[in-house]
Each structure stands twice: as C-alpha cells, then as structure tokens.
Image (cartoon, rainbow, N blue to C red; front, side, top):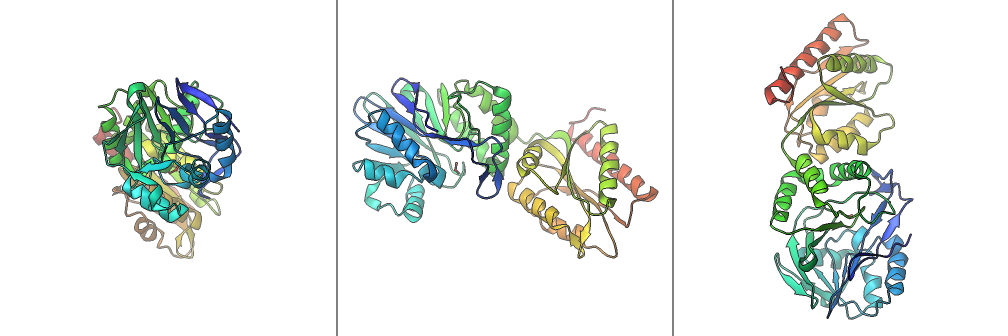
Length: 397
Ligand code: FEO
C-alpha cells in the first residue's frame, strides 16, 4: 500500500504499509502486519532518503518517489543493514545513480556482503558526524544493537526529528502517520521490544540516555507510526529496559496426559490467592510474541513440562531456547511437571538457559499424577515466590 505524506515541511513519508505480513524471520508473529517506513528530506541544496523498504515492496517506494516528482537523490541514509530497510537500495541506486549510501563503516561491510553494492557508492560516517543538506543538517548517532551491531540513528537538527529505524518502532500496519491510538501502539511496541530489543537491554539504556541530549520533537522509526509525543515511547522504553521487575509469574507449559496441567492450574490458583499476577501460556499453539511480552516485566518464570524420552517436551525446549535468547530480566525461575518412569527434565531444561541470571527455586516434579504431597510442594513453591517478591519490594506486606 502506498502512503505518501508530509511528516513536516519538506520531509515526506514514502515507505510502504504491509497489511498482510504475518511472520518475520519465519519466526516472529506479526498479528497486526507492519510497515517499512522510508523518509525523504528535501533540503535547500541536497535531497536525502532515510532507509528504504523490504524488497517485496520496492515498487511502492519507487512509485511514491515518482509521484513526488523526485528527480535526484544525493544521499541514501542506511541506518541499518537488515533487508527490510536496505533491500531496495540496489534498485534506488539504479534509478538515482548519483546517490551515495551514507552509513556506519560496519553497515558498509554488511551491505557490500548482502547486497553486493560496490564500495565506491558509500560514504561512511563516524559517530557525531554531520551532513548538510543546505538549510537542514543531519547528525549521525552510532547506536549499536538496535538492532544489529552496525545500526545508527539520524537526527535532523533544525526540525528536531530523529529517524530511529528499528529502535522505538512497532510492527503495526496502520493508516495513521502519527500515533493516535496509544493503547494499540503500546501493545505493538512492547511486543516489538520484547522480540527484537530485549536481548540488548543494557545497551538500549545507553542509547536511550544519548537521546536525552537532543531536542526531539518527533521520533520517526522505520516500523509503525511516528511519535509526535516522544515521551510516550521514551517512557515506555525506560520502563521496559529498567532493572525493575513486577509482581508477576509467567507460566509457559504443556501437558500430554493432564498431570502437568493439574499442577499448573493448582499452582496458578495458589499464586493468585497470594496476590501475584499470573500469565499462563499453553505452548501447544503458542503466540511466542505474547510470551515474550510477558517476560518483559515478570519477576519469576515457572516452566511446566511433562517428560518425553527423559527430557522436557520439545515444545517446552523451544520456549526455553527462546527465553534464553531473549534474556529477560526475570530474577527467579522454577520447573514443575511430571514423568512416567524416569526424568532428567530439570537438569536438561536448566542447562538450556545459561543466559538467564536467575535464582532457581526448588522444582516440583511428580511421578504419575499429582497427589496431596505434590500440591503441598506447589504451595511451598508459591510461598517461596511470595517471599522472594517481598524481598524485592514488589509485593506489599
Ligand atoms: Fe526492521 Fe532489524 O530490521
């Protein structure tokens, strides 16, 4: 879908809205689609294009540029080398042969490798470097790991607009150029943070701190709507990336014959009775984005699994690998579940999550179906979680 609109005078949104895309990286669900935002800035002397779009929607970008009557592009600013933003660069360079690709030195390497762009086409910029378009000035801010090591932000000084590419974005297809429905955007942005940014939480905090020095009027990411009230998304990121956790327990689980399900249900009630918020996820048909979102804030995760060939259920293994990769700030973890004749589920599962810097609370694993003894053990585990949360000050006496 073509959406060609003026973000501010002489700054146009020329990217594409992808209403139908439902999966990213063959992994991440996109329940609300996404957009690949590209922005054209016309200075009094030079014209710059900020990022391009996914290769599947190159025609939309080109049509938008043609309909705006753009005859020349001097600089093609590549904030990020991932193909959903860089994939149309070769075609744009064919149409606008005098354009130079402006990016970090690392981004140049990646673009040469992945898109076979000749090295003569690049201008590399160091952190803090500026580039004049005449009456408008671009400042480049190296911001590694939002989302790859080569990423940078581009700040348009005179207009107070910062182009952040993946950073502060959201997978959300919308006809709104700016955020209008904060509830919807908060949900989409949190899902995006959880899936894309959470593994780099300490670096995210440093990148956020760098924005404090800038006068920001508008945040223009390359996914989702732009923010003309920057505090909304900056405060949300400040919360998500902080070390603060909430009085919440996330329970991803699966059950084959009902024993683990009985334990999970009993345990969920035990936690709720003790004043703890519970987020339960049946992994038989999981929305991993929802699970990732729940892990943004929770103080504790308790995994429920039956035993398959002495190990955890493969769908639990998948969730554990994902949690390990996303590096949530959870403080405590435990495992509950069942087995028929023997189990090394606890040892195998804990070994799969070395990135989680958690205190492991005594697991509860039952042979066969749970009985009185196991329910008492689940009560003990619930009590222990309450005590741990009290120690953190996130549950009141
Ligand atoms: Fe939207 Fe890391 O690309």
